[in-house]
Length: 393
Image (cartoon, rainbow, N blue to C red; front, side, top):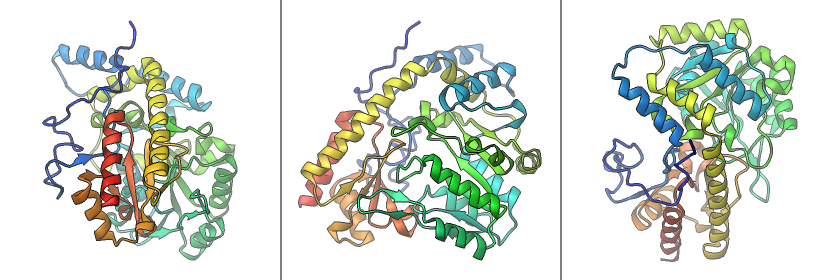
């Protein structure tokens, strides 16, 4: 059986499908006819192997409590080995309905109310939410950008914040959303060595690992053997294969004590079995989704290159650096000299677009917008034309 869903150009109508991306504009304070390129899901049909596996499971007609068998772990293990050269153990694995849920469980497991949790803003905004919603404090070591717009960690500030704020937990985003960095081995070693020195647990969100374009993705816990003792690695097929609604994530915690503390919080939250169709989809994706993923990666990389060329040529007041990873592009609007409200008005009212405002990723994101390019080229072109016209107006 060959992969059927390799057409990424056809625009699929997603309205009236309970789509968060398409069906909730008015409820989220946006015009009904806004063009959405915000939340990180793709406008592409999933691999036909996933689709067929779900249809087959649905035809059985009974959807009771489900759990994974040995085959599930073996399929996941092979994916991790093939794509990241990472050998995982089955005892390390805890399944959750999503990585944000896992981040919240880690915050509760490894810190106490009032403790500081370190992040590097601008960063995926649920990082901040799981900290503050659980009564902890955000400690931000803000990323710095060089003259070419490439973001870096200020390691002197990073370590100082750990010491001054008595930080015991760091939430790492790798690849980094929204700025698109894929952290190098040297950078990950510096993070790891500082955190080891000061007894800081590292929770590494690696959900975008399969979208590493510039170099091979490195799993944080595998960079050095000793990092396993203080690492929680969060993985999922959901971003890679566009199955976020099926709610399945694989969290790997090599250290037994950290694993027990994490599991205690999952149990306390009342969570046990994962989504029946999430299991089916994960197995199908990791076992047969390779051809589809290769096609998606080529298409997204072409879209990224197209977007950068378009902006450089047609909207020179904006600037963008091609991301090293993810399908999310971070666009700098600051040269327009607009306030936050004025920029939102430009994007939403004048351009008729729904993007993610940079401000939600932290103060360092003000003046930026995040755009999701995992969509047909025609959709992306329409969005860019709208931005060009709004800026010219």
